[in-house]
Image: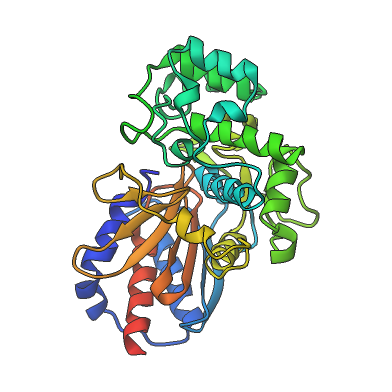
Amino acid sequence: MKYYVFGLVLCLLSCKSQKDAVNYTGSHEEILTRILEEEVQSTDATVTGVSLTVISPQLGIDFSGASGYDSMTKNHVLTPDQPFRIASLTKTFVATSILRLREKGLVSIDDPITNYISKEHIAILEKGGYTPSHITIKQCMTHTSGLFDYAEGNMDYITEAAKDPYKRWTRTEQIQWAMDHGEPKGAPGENYHYSDTGYVLLGEIIEKQTNKGLAEGIRELLKFDTLGMTSTWLESLEDRPDGLPTSVRRYMETLDASDWDNSVDLYGGGGLQSTTRDLAVFLQALFSGKVYEKQETLPVMLLKSEFSGDPLTEYRLGFGYIKGKKSDIEAYMHSGFWGTLFIHFPAYNCSIAINHTNDESNGALQKVINYIQWLAEQQ
């Protein structure tokens, strides 16, 4: 979640002076393509490749493009239709799935997780010093459960995973890892602490309440097939769709972790592969009433929580929320470990999804947001 956030806040606060100095000549496709090319060619960053989708019916934009390469070896040109591991963006899909279960009357987000998870996992949490009967589904969704984050809370997990990149991790092992390597981060509902552990428990709830595997449960609840999301799948838990090009390589700085077993980040905290196109299509569908079946559900998802997390952002139910201090611009977003981010601006009915092959650069994203705001001002 930390990836991009500070840069995005700067976008929302300071883009006015920057866009005044830019001459936006050409079509949407020409301007956005130029932004991508500048990102890869910039001497201020070491970006190998970047792919982008921008959809805004209100502004007349429907663009997908890419520039650069799909790996640091630079032996294959990146194309817009190449999928990639989206890491924590998966959390938005999981949270949306939980709220779809709520619509069906299968869960209450104010219920304790003990109503829905296995006795084995309840026992592990209790032995780890938690009172799981006091932890609610909603607290897991908003990262206010107090659960230690097995994935990012301690670099020991990455170090251990690197010893055997092909190890097949289980959800139970990841929950146990959190118990063994960290202390509770406060009582449930007491404060904000980002936690993949809470989201793997949410993944378990989806499995149990749909009586299906996590992949099939999410796919059906979120209507992937109806929305035409043909390039999105839960890696290793369902078949890779036919006809897709090779996936973009994934890096930790210069370490190529593309071939690591994806169970290192699966089960709810991460795990999906997708494309920028599918990600933007999903955001558009979500905010346009095509995913939820009740009008009341999206406002529940976007409701302000008691604890905001980062002082410049707030975390809702599966989304980060940003509002510019010097403007009324609001945005809902999530980012992922590998360099992926998607963001929706309700005022412009605009969804943006961006992925970098490597390097944590905000340059292209900021330019895209600047351009979107400039277009809106021309209307």
